[in-house]
Image 1 (cartoon, rainbow, N blue to C red):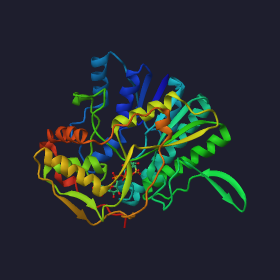
Image 2: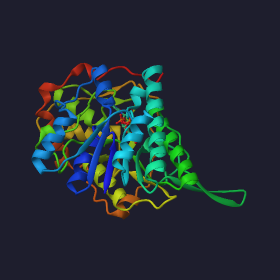
Image 3: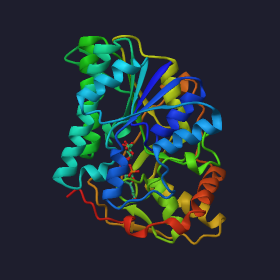
Amino acid sequence: MKILIAGGDGYLGWPTAMHLSALGHDTLVVDNFLRRQLCHAEDCPSLFPIVSLHDRVRHWKQKTGITIGTAIGDLTNWGFVEKVFDDFKPDAVIHYAEQPSAPYSMKSREAGHLTLHNNITTTFNLVQAIHLFMPDCHLIKLGTMGEYGTPNIDIEEGWLDITHNGRTGRFLYPRQAGSLYHTTKVMDTDLLWFYVRVWGLRVTDLMQGPVYGIETAENEGCPDLYSAFNYDEIFGTVLNRFMVQAVCGHPLTVYGKGGQTRGYLSIKDTLQCVRLALETPAAPGDMRIFNQFVETFSVNELAEKVAESGRRLGLDVEVQRFPNPRKELEDHYYNPRHSALTDLGLKPHLLTESRMDAMLSLVLQYRHAVHQPCIVRGVAWA
Ligand code: USQ
């Protein structure tokens, strides 16, 4: 298949490009380096030195003989989008090209507007280009479990059957996001559902939980092929942050009561999930929604797992409660379904002690590179 990976330079986009190209797909990475620029501007460096996209593509070619194509430009610019689609004519688009940080989106009016404009316009342009150039193309969109929020009822996979005054209908499951970033994903879902209804697009919307990890089958032992790994308050996800905090002697930053529960998955499972969605495309006029995570943990449970792993590795890890900079429930019911991807064949990599220790050992090798000032930055929802 010809696969366009929008946001293919990112934490998940680049590993996806390697994974799918290794399976024999003709892969094109499209990116404008927004994530690199924002991290640079916010003084939030990656733990590992970031190799340029062009160098990674060269390293991958040397290692495997496979060429990954690149198109550098901004997907909010219609002229660029039109040219890329006209030239490449993808059979599938994997859409990661969004500003992915909740704290960044809440930082200032400007950052909020950038998030809103970038995320919604990119989704809109991709939908328009698919309709115009490749109406049969399957769009796989990375959404987020955060679209649902933390309701006091079970979370279904995307849809809810509602009986009202004796009549029953199927609707998008109610969304109530906890940040402007998460709200842009809700808006994406609505936009996609609208165009599925009117234009018969084929869409899979993946409600993904926070991802952790570094190595995949394709980059194992090859730092030149690693993605950027953020551990700062703005761009780092919680488990990646805790791992880095553990190795540099920073207390683990549990926000508030630490009962916030989310569905987690490793970067290896993200690749599996995206591949499974690709191999079983949505039918025309179908909008599939899959909940993409493999196990749930509270922040307290994650902190305890990191502290235990640290002890096994001889580290003295302190867990500390910090005032929560976010507005979120710290103690809540959380029971989301997640059977659709398992039914397609997902084989989860669970967060076992040995996997925790392997990741922490790898992070420990880069302890000298940790930039402590970015760990707590004080971005508050208020
Ligand atoms: N948290 C802490 N301490 C920290 C960092 C986070 O207690 O140092 C807590 C947060 O308050 C939150 C939970 O850990 O309750 C998860 O936070 P996170 O920063 O790992 O995840 P989040 O901001 O929700 O966003 C991340 C990705 C985003 C993705 C989302 C999936 O950045 O792109 O969409 O995970 S989900 O969380 O399911 O919405």
